[in-house]
Length: 199
Image 1 (cartoon, rainbow, N blue to C red):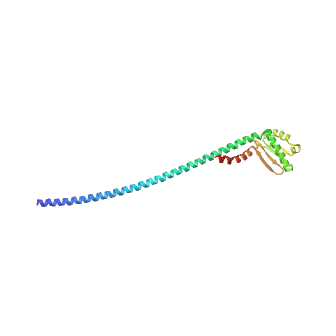
Image 2: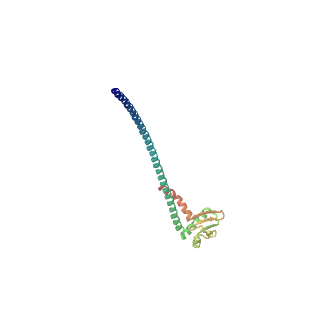
Image 3: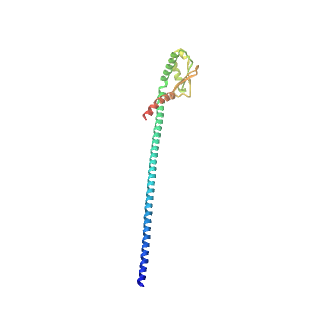
């Protein structure tokens, strides 16, 4: 009876061991499957994170390059603007210096004489000049003009003129601006494309 009991116990133990082995194998298989799924999922997530990081890095690089290009354009535009201002100021100073005193009187007399020679008709001409130079220019211009032109040409002060002059034909209402500012703008406009080309 003890042998039978022992055999029964051995059989139960054997069955339990097989059952436990089967469960263990099933748990191991499930664990391996879960681990493989986790690894696969982790790889997929890692690839997605890397892809996103690459896209963000590429976008960041692109935005950085665009910002750098924009900053370069802004610097060039600011430089061009500053150069144009300096050219205009320099030309204006040169014009103011050139169009002063005897030089200006000579230019005015020559201009009036040339106009009358080409047009034939003598219009009443008014020259608007700087109030500071009125007395000097009045004497110098009248000294350079012949008598019949002196009667048709008079100088008047204008607060709007710092240097140079404005030529007004009274009967026709036409005015030409030969002030230092107007001439500087004209020369500056001519020089601006050349400055831009250098940049």
